[in-house]
Length: 88
Length: 379
Image (cartoon, rainbow over all chains, first blue to last red; front, side, top):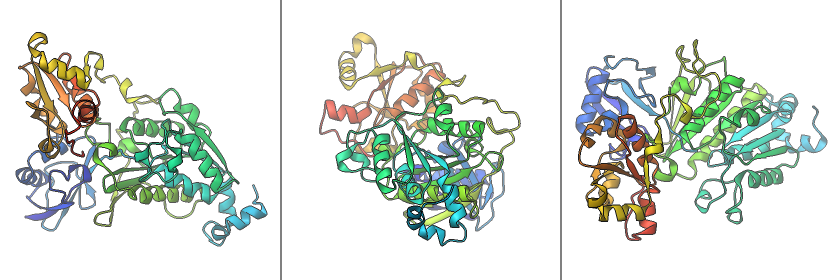
């Protein structure tokens, strides 16, 4: 299943600068695994060793916050990755 | 608080707006707003709030103006380099609008002074550039009941959101706790000069709306601006019942600096090596024991140029790969400016690695002091 993943500025070094990349997977976990295969190292910037979303990261499925990585993803969905910024 | 004839003339275009009018302009006149951070965000925000007639503006910033600020910090001019930002901002804002009062707070906000600085203000704008200061300001605003208009920037992206205690989430509801070093600063990563102009203007807009009661504030809505795609995205943010400061059972009951938290690592054992000291230690490593150079920058930065013998473990991956450092000698963490490497030391100390080292000032210092041809990639 295909979706779109929007990448925050601090993680675009992994995607060659791309702000949005095609995603694949039936759940958020699968979408992240697919991302990791394409852009090695990016998943660990979002999810820790215990599979918890890092405290400075938020994931949204369309306009709803993702609270479990098992959440289903449907074709055409957009996964937003939000990262805390601190520049002023 | 009525308006003088000169003020009525100055604010004529506001008076023509039904949503502001004379009543709203008088509310602005008696309002007191603190702009925390006179940088890329604080500059346009303070200028617009001064122009709009906010009666008392505070500007809190302990830094001095540097040449590299002028690409985006429109409060300052070339002649201001080396001057205190807070005092310089006060002069500039009063030149723009002598009808208002401007208070310069030439301090870095800490847990020791934040109560005193904030107490005279109705509303706070956060445009600071340190992660820990953002949490400090948020916590203080929640605890003292001050509305907070927050914005932050990175390269071509900006975020803005308004927090009003009791009416929505706070910053900790959005991002529960700081993760120092996880996100590069503007100094390391760069920033489009006009980007904070957009976000700072949004902060000023929010402040004026909150003070006059006009419109719908950005409460519980995170606004994300992507300048490269010219795209605004809005996502909902809910208050968290388990928030450490505004939740049902708060554990933060007074402002504190992030370094004071109970689980903050003790960095007193960290060896802070100057470029010269590192070079000498590398040359005589046999005597003092072997060093393991760990470059914690991103792979792209590492590829541009790195110190001979260094391994690349980006800071974001380090937590899961500390086991790789268990043997081989004292780890010396290296990055561009010394911020990420110090965060790496904190991770190492927390994991039980004794006396890790880092290159103070990073590779920028190495290039400046030892090797002018050493190319340091932008973060």
